[in-house]
Amino acid sequence: MALFLVAGMCVGIAQRNGKKRKPVSDSTASPKLIVGIVVDQMRYDYLTRFWNHYSEGGFKRMVSQGFNCKNHHFNYAPTSTGPGHASVYTGATPSMHGIIGNNWYDKVQGESVYCASDDAFESVGTSGDAGKMSPHRMLTTTMTDQLRLHTQMRGKVIAVALKDRGAVLPGGHTANAAYWFEGGSTGNWITSSYYMDALPQWVSDFNSSDAVEAYKKPWTTLKPINTYLESGPDANSYEGKFQGETSTVFPHDLPKLWDENGKFNLLRITAYGNSMTTDFALAALEGEDLGKDDITDFLAISYSSTDYVGHFFGVNSKEVQDTYLRLDNDLERLFNTLDKDVGEGEYTVFLTADHGAINVPAYLFDQKIPAGYLNNNAQKQRFEAFLKYRYGTTNIVKDISNNQVFLDHKVIGNLDMDLDDVQEEIAMELLGYDNVYKVYTAHQMWRTNYTSGLPNILQNGWNQKRSGDILLVPPPGFASYSRTGSTHGSPMVYDTHVPLLLFGKGIKKGNTAERTEIPDIAPTISVLLGMAFPNGVTGEPISEALKN
Image 1 (tube, rainbow, N blue to C red):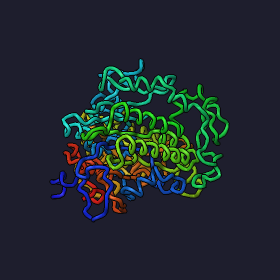
Image 2 (image 1 turned 90 degrees about the vertical axis):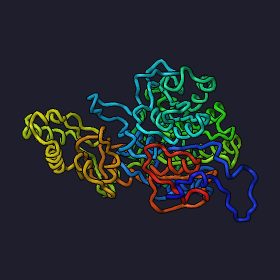
Image 3 (image 1 turned 30 degrees about the vertical axis):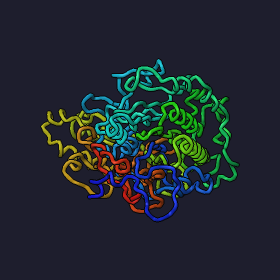
Image 4 (image 1 turned 120 degrees about the vertical axis):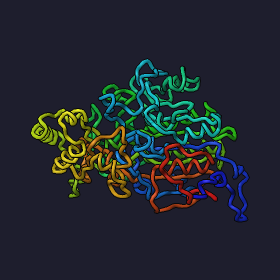
């Protein structure tokens, strides 16, 4: 623990091995820029499956020049975008930071709320409501907040993503700006009055250019499709089809499909969405003068199209493979620009994901692997019949969402029943359903300190004030989803195992197969910068990734 108490000593001290070094930077100084990259829905095996197709300047550069955590996991559920981004940047789990889902049932308001929505603020850059966002539901600080505090607000923090939550949550409470993509008929990048009253000139200029319109073109494969041997057949029954398409195969004629599929929203569900994000991130790099002085700045980038494509086409599709090969090119373009504009050896990058994904259950089933879909309607009818028979009313349940049951504590009190007994009784009823693999109650989460296994993962995702009374775990390989495309959210390994790559200033070359976890990222970067940890942090620094 002494290492953590003298974090400032761990920041970039040069190795004294007698080798001649490039005089590119002061090795005792902090990086001029931290670039945090979250690839939405990136399973770890996308790194290895498509390895032979990657260039030397993208994923391979990070692995060869940096540190690869091969056994990196989410240590909580639900594994979804909002909690994922919050956990990466806070170094905590939903039990601490409070982002327990993309949407969740608010027990105080009695309605579902969205993780980033905030009607107290107005949209900037659009006349619609898409910009009415803020991080106010995130209860702890982020590493980006701590950087701002550490530098007396002089270090800039800019966050960029197609999804609003992919920018708002990484940016933290004190970001200079967070930008996201409106789509629709405008194709503009927008923000919230939480950050500013008007878009900076460089954003307005970007929106006025044809940078986004340039991607209104057919989606063809980057390489000959017959070389995509690491994914399934292009024509299959496991993928979605765009409106107006008669098959799932390449090429996808985006101009022809444009109007029927939401115009600029269509680009989200293609590899081009990541290229658009890179274009805008590079514009932010220049427009905000990031990494231009000795005060560390932070550029947070979330690549959202990987998630859209995975949901629509499935993890074994040619479309997913092409999306990652094109993302690899975008990463190379990003790193080359950073080398030129910030300086090679002057910046530090980490790359991870906000969750993994299950293979299409219908495909797994056809391969004789236990898998399938949850019949929620049948389960709901049976459950309601049980509630009426046992308690005389269904009002005892206020909401079922995110695999949690929310009970009405007032109704239980009026029935003169003990809450713990009702939780256990309902849990036992639900355990008898085919859709349910395991159940846990809030009483168990409250009273027991689980240290391993599924209960520990669920407990890390359970927030005392926000989560439900009964937690449900579907069987492995099963999902509540359409029969095409992939999804996520479970505590199973296919949803928890994701990459963590670090490279650049202060990072060792190497790898580990020891388990590391998502909350470890923020304290690792905090040690690198010699600054205070986020105030709810539960992770530990990955010391073997840092130079002595």
